[in-house]
Length: 455
Ligand code: CA
Image 1 (cartoon, rainbow, N blue to C red):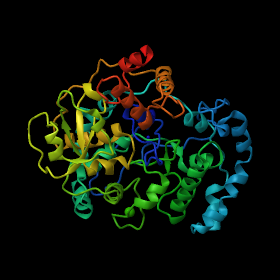
Image 2 (image 1 turned 90 degrees about the vertical axis):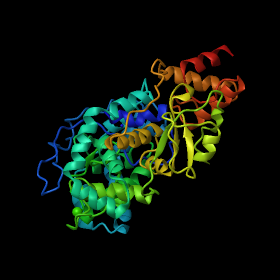
Image 3 (image 1 turned 135 degrees about the vertical axis):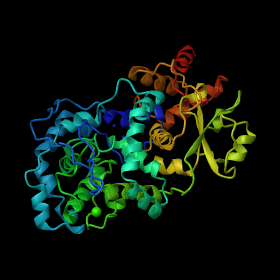
């Protein structure tokens, strides 16, 4: 989800990915400078000059109602919950005990915790603009990051060799996630994960979800995998070079270097193995790619561009879908769905099962596309061949709301207009486009907004 920070969250609007479930990657906040050590004998990531933000040193809470309008996000509800914070944290002891956290550790790690209410502003901030998919790709996949990624692959070749053998997950995908999530451990938040998740577990509109994250964070500390100082990250609780949430860390982190700690923050072997392990558990197929850039024929039925519509590459070929360089698909029997992230005016992609494994890291399609493409570029692959419709203007928040309201008024959209262009808005747009005989690509352009206004 997230500089990068807000990007991952806001991209869902242009990615129009599903928002179901919590992201592994949370919203990253402030950039932190740091460097990867030169020593190859001790493959540890340098911990940047990262200090956990102290109460008072960071920006304060605005004291205002949240933009979501959720009753638990009103200023009054936030103040009440904050006043009850100590009792709320103490009330989580029985659940922590059930997970095996000792009373001594519970005391030690929760002592002196205070709520970080600034998070409430961040949680409900609604971006005026969202990034177009091409801008998102430009930011994440660029020559500097590619050069750095290749340097990382060379420097930690021994670790990548061993992890690739053990998990069957292509090293470039793992290196891509590390690079995009934290620019190789040089970007990340500086908030205490324990404090952020405790705050979110006791204040605001997603308490049940974050209660689980807070308990998972305690569990990690109780096991001795990490120290509180190592668990710093985004306001939403994602931490470390590959931005695991605490629950994801508990599910997927492995001790690959055998020192007894699952240290997916500082140990290169542990962090790349943990990421590969997650992809493997999420269905990564060894030796296969994630997808292909394709061109679709004129008059193509864009209703087929749907995550739920999976056909073999040979069937897609039969429908006139081709790789832009004319090369055949190496495995025509593989099933894929068609994604047209910028609509009929931009490149399309046939996405294989491995793309779905990346989506489980973060459900935004633009994110998964960036990960896959960056991996290809690390391997020496070329930029996409087809141009993006860069002349397209990204809709403002007011326009996104208007678009949803107009779709609702015309009977195409049943959700509550919220300015977030997700899957439901895309489906509504496609139905509208089909009804007026334009390509039903579901792309929220200023043109389609004009057409809606005129009807
Ligand atoms: Ca270890």
